[in-house]
Image (tube, rainbow, N blue to C red; front, side, top):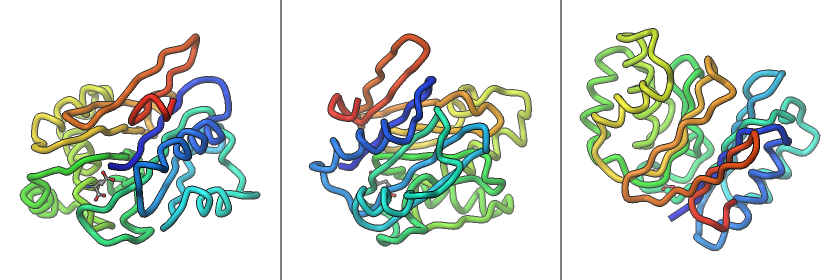
Length: 201
Ligand code: GLU
């Protein structure tokens, strides 16, 4: 078990996400990562080890002021413990990003299929196939909104997941889905927060 936190609203997302991850630390993890979207575009940072390492790495970095974001603590199941394998994972164009708790059981078949369609993988994780699968469906059906692309991708996925997807084309949104792995959604006035459990939110 590991952790997920997502925030979309009007406050700065980063402190909310870091707080949420800290409240999930007791569940155990080996690496951590965060994505923030704001006026300066999309920023991603990942580290091996503790959430405090992530905080240190982010100190003084610009561009992390946005009010939409998602963060993850990973407990590696597919692929070693490395920065490259830490979440978020992205598609070929760095447009669609995914954080995920759980296991994609048919990732080998999906990775092979997507590889034949010239998707280039940057990690050894099962999670990364989700981003490329969504990208592939977008190529085939370019006008669908991100939530529909995610829905269609999940029909092809076997396994357990709590996941959050960010799409740079619709940067005010986060899309979340779950199957067996828990996720909890908090809805406020003009803001939403999602977490792997109540402690996160
Ligand atoms: N299976 C994914 C990975 O190895 C997610 C593991 C997790 O639940 O943190 O990256």
